[in-house]
Image 1: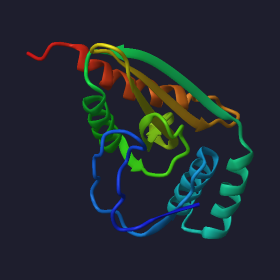
Image 2: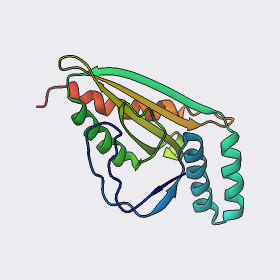
Image 3: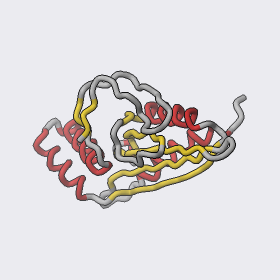
Image 4: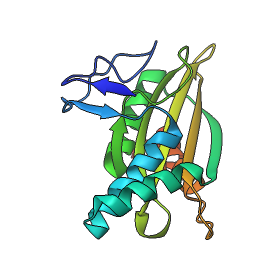
Length: 174
């Protein structure tokens, strides 16, 4: 578990420094599995009003298989611009999360967004950027969500939604 104080120093490890809005002090899960289980547990508490049953949902969620999807593309935008756009896209659709496990040598931003049916299936989306020679930035967008008996492909939908917004950086502005 990672404890986040009122200000996160940076959303990006070894990358551009963008300071987010002040955060409240909370203990946040670190692994994708823990984050998704906690998000599903919060949803169960919110809908049922009972924490006892919700804790069972959190436990069961850790046992469910993941729907993981990754897409990659290149852009002419610089890494900081891509990360700022990723931050805005995640904030628009959900909540930015600091401390999600990611490679330490690649600049990244992560968050939880609603996906699947009615946007009720939480998905962890991570955007990683890597600058190449010239004006080319490699972008990797990964989405992970829990899948039950009815496959919603929520991880895939979440990753594609964020990637679509970031690919718009390549289009000329009118």
